[in-house]
Length: 193
Image 1 (spheres, rainbow, N blue to C red):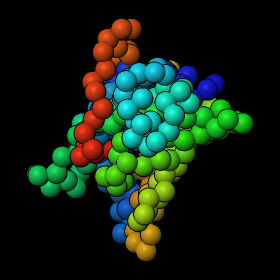
Image 2 (tube, helix red, strand yellow):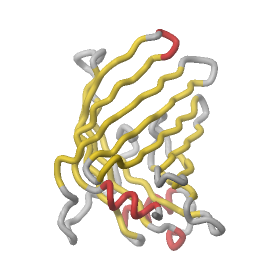
Image 3 (cartoon, one colour):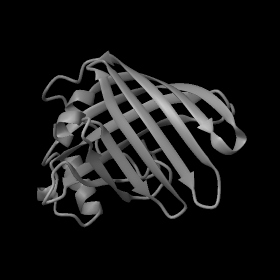
Image 4 (tube, helix red, strand yellow):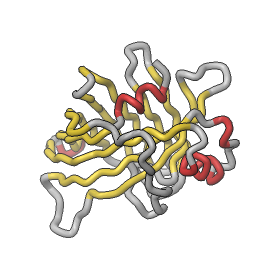
């Protein structure tokens, strides 16, 4: 499986149920969200734009994805909002296309453009690894079946606390019909996926 096969399998709308473990506090928090994923082919204007943002030749990208989400966590304050969108591009390593760069217009944990790494592992799971100035995150996605996607993540804050999460994501709808347009690149202030 190549990385774009994984994103094509992920295309559609998903209901995500999350348990987040706040490790220093020894407490768990439940939450949920609706996630929409659209695979973007190479040469898509949003993929080209992300590559240009990071000074990467767009011809090297194999595609990307446009992701939106809307959710809530149990400990949220009334003014907290877990809604946003992001676009990213995938640039495989020249010597091993099962891994490469994940270019984002904003990070998952920090609101800045960031270049992470992706890898398709031996069990056809997708690893996303991102190092920030103040933290690092590792996520792993895999399919239990075509309509059930599972995800784990660990966020380590340097000199601070860590969280570990598990999500079970069930498919609500199939991907958009071929030829439907994708929204333009999300603004830099959008929350990262």
